[in-house]
Length: 205
Ligand code: HEM
Image (cartoon, rainbow, N blue to C red; front, side):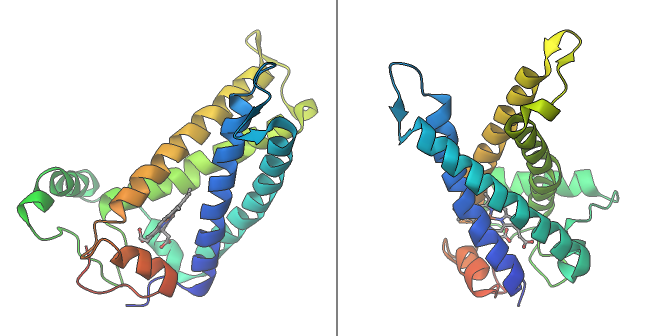
């Protein structure tokens, strides 16, 4: 099954590389202080690389949104209300118990259903909630002059910073869990092969 068109694969690989750069440079900035001026990457280098990677990530994100809007890939991100919670529970039960007992995937991949319910929910939350918030708060930190000065007496810049760090942390955790769940195809490597070649081996999931 051809499930990952070229533009999506190009977006994904660039997004993953940029994420790694942003995590390394972000941690470098977070843990730098006067005594410890270079944690992983030197402070000024970390700022330059973080800003550069962030700008490329924003452009890449716009391509993702437009691509999903204009092509059939967007339909995989639509959450229907019917049975959503019960389907989510079925998938959670499979990941918690079923797969260790050799049970079959409750939602096998088809051309109509690329993602299982849990994948769909986490991808929608990551791509359409956390990433936009990360980007907006990042722009606010890059241009502090446009950030609201105070919100209920608290510095707007500090609140923007907290939002940015929270989203960055959440997406880093998402990425770790994402990589783990991507090993749960029919073979540990088959889903990774899919996102590189574009083809999903049909007995996965
Ligand atoms: C080294 C890091 C990463 C690896 C190895 C990786 C691996 C994969 C693999 C194997 C798939 C295909 C399986 C599937 O359809 O679910 C996939 C899809 C996906 N990944 Fe990643 N990923 C990485 C980083 C990221 C990051 C940082 C994000 C977002 C913040 C992300 C978002 C997505 C999304 C949204 C899809 C589904 C794309 C679609 O088919 O529409 N990935 N990833």
